[in-house]
Image (cartoon, rainbow, N blue to C red; front, side, top):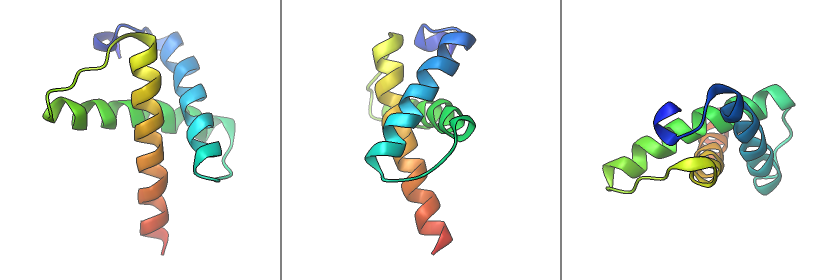
Length: 83
């Protein structure tokens, strides 16, 4: 998170927003804690995947985009595993 240019407090806020946006986009129903977790873990996962392709997202906007994309991927993965 520090490498993305955001601190822990900002990561929680941005992760919550990213998780909430992913929840609405994927028509999922989760709580605020799960939204924050999905946003933060999603940002880490998405940044790792994008780094493999040579794409680096930094700052608040980059963390929000990565969190949204990663959270959507995690929600989709959770749906696949539950089936």
